[in-house]
Structures are given as structure tokens and as C-alpha cells.
Amino acid sequence: MHRTLLTILCFSLGASGVGGATNVDFGVTYPLTARVGVSDWPALGGTVAAGVSTRGVDVSYARGLSLPPLGALNTSVQAQVAWAGGFRVASATSGALGPVALSLSGTYFTASAATFDPLAGWTLAPTDLRGNGWNADLGVRYRVNRNLVALLGTELGGPWNVYGGVEQRRDLTRTLPRAEGDDPDAPLETETTGTLSYRLGARAGTDVLGATAGFTYTTADGRAFALDAQVGPERGGHSGLGLVASVSFADVLGENSRLRTYAAYEPWRWNTNPLRAGVEITKPVGPGTLKLDLRGGLNQAGETGFGAAASYSFPLGQAEQEP
Image: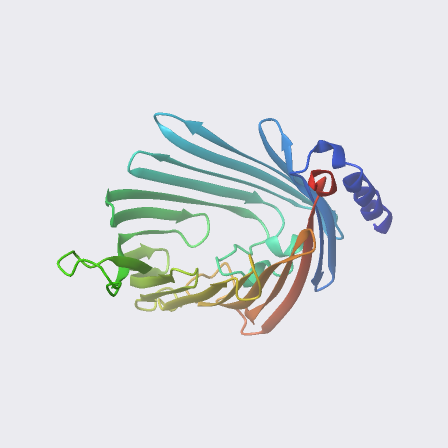
């Protein structure tokens, strides 16, 4: 296995001729996993990412298309094969046509997501942890006007459900004081200090029925706080309650850095861990980007789990681009 990793590493470092946009990626995770690969490799009109780890191999392809006057389309596909047996194939497509935005994603698998990533069960977005099966998500967003969006979606394959609601967005502003010499009769100027979005909706499906509400507050300097709650009765032995919160900060650890903390409690999702929490840090270091993750929580049996990961992405060809 180590020989395989070394071979891939040498191949990646020798691929600098493919262009400066390509990255070489290194990563280690506890429980012990090591991975090396390449990403953002221009190919077939899109970009390719591929890697090998102590758990398996993976390859993905992504492409974005502009289709004027219709709109834009983004699509991706990923395949993973585990050394211990089993695979996962996932695809996602999103596009916009005027005021309508659609997203569709799906996965077919014969191995759990945790087979490839031991931290998969503790992510902010819920990850299906079943050992085999399929799932699909479909979402439609309709922009009623600049500040109001209606949404409708469904989740299939796991705990099937449909959800819908509306989201209202408003800009937060403040009035600027008049400068010396300004016309006292002229209207006062304002500046945007952030945005505030409210969400209201409902969810219904297998073992779940509840009302949903939430909000996101974003400041002008890139700080954001999001909170979403679900309230509903117990169905099929699963609580209908839910709470998801996240806080993120831009440039708090230096220019172009990002810090995010999150926590999610969703006991009605029986195919994933009901309690998930984590801290994510992204920071430029040298010519590349360092990412640190610490995640954990409780599984369906009430047992505690946790893990940590560190990765570094290094852009190839940067030395040739510098004056």
C-alpha cells in the first residue's frame, strides 16, 4: 500500500506539465488514513481530481457550462473503490433558467461513506452512512422577486421526505453622517452593513413531520451565523425535533483564511449520526492552502465518536508564474 502511495505521489509531482491550475493534495486523518492526489486538472473541457489512499482510490470530473440565453449548468460525477471491497458512484447537477434554479444529486453505493472517510458521519450536511443502497435529492428554487424565494424539494432513498417553504432576504444598512461642506438639504447616504434572511417551511415523509424555521445573518466583512430549527411530533420511534447552527469567520486567522464551527442535532435522520459537531479551518500557508478539521458527536447507539484531519493543497507550476 505504501508503495502505491509513493507511486501516485511521484506521478502527481511529475504532472506539473498539465498546467498551473492543477493542485497536488496531501491529507492525513485520524482514525488513521493517508491520501495523496491531484485536483483541478484541466481535461475534457472540465476539471479532473483523482487520488489514492490507504482506504481506496477515487476519481471525479466536474464541468460548468454557460448556455445563453438559457442560463448556466454545472455537473459533476465521482467514483470511489475501496481496497476492502465495495464502491460508491455519485453525481450532481445544478442549473439556472431565468428565475428558476434546480439541483439534482444522487449516489449508488455498496460501501459506507465512512469506508473512505472516517469523518464522513460528522459533517454539517448529513451523510448517508448505510452500507449499501442509493439516495437522491431534488431541489427547486423560484425567485419571486429580488428578496423573496420559494423552494420545494425531496429526499429519496433514505428517510424519504418532501420539504418546502419561502425565504425572505433583506439588506441591512446604516445612515452615514454628513461630511463637512455637504448640502444640508441633500438626502443622507447609506451603506450596506450585512444581510438577513428568514426561512419558514415544513417537512413531511417517512417517520418525520414538522414545521421548519431559520435565519442567516451575514456581515459586510464576511462573518455569518445561521440557525435552522424543526419542530414536530415523534413518528416511528424517531423524534421530529431538529436544530442546525453554524458560525463562520473570514480572514480571522489571516488574509483569505476561513474558520467555521457548527453543530447539528437531527435524531429523525435514522441513516446518519443524529448529533454532529465540528471546527473547520482553511488558511493559506506558503504557496498552498492548509485545511484542518476536528469533528465528532454521537451515533444512533448513543456512542461518542470523533476524528481529526489535516490536508495541504499545493498548486503546480506556481514557480514558473512568479516574476
